[in-house]
Image 1 (cartoon, helix red, strand yellow):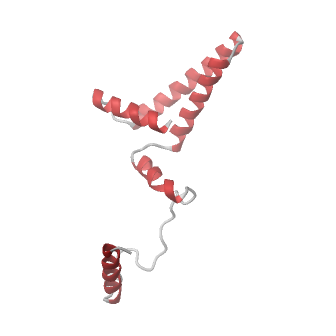
Image 2 (spheres, one colour; image 1 turned 45 degrees about the vertical axis):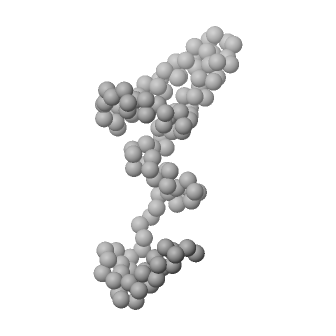
Image 3 (cartoon, rainbow, N blue to C red; image 1 turned 135 degrees about the vertical axis):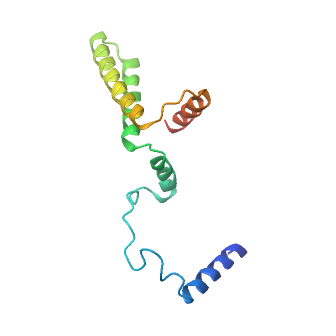
Length: 124
């Protein structure tokens, strides 16, 4: 252990002995359910940051579906099937854009849009 860990542990033990934790809100009650308990511990912080930023799993799933459909369109040789896939993609994009416009503030900042694009590229 390093020096800061030892100091921290010592202060926590001393505070516990002095009863400083007894008057905290929620003392003696069970911890609230963590909806990210099923997420691996090394990914939990990233998921929590995305969740706090308003980014949900539904958006991620829709984005993944759109990418899959785009790949299918690129590999499709049948024009009728390609047309159906394109229609399905358009519907998903409309729904995705509708959800995103309701959740986000409209900003015309090019800096924000570049940053948003970089984040999306990293995530997908």
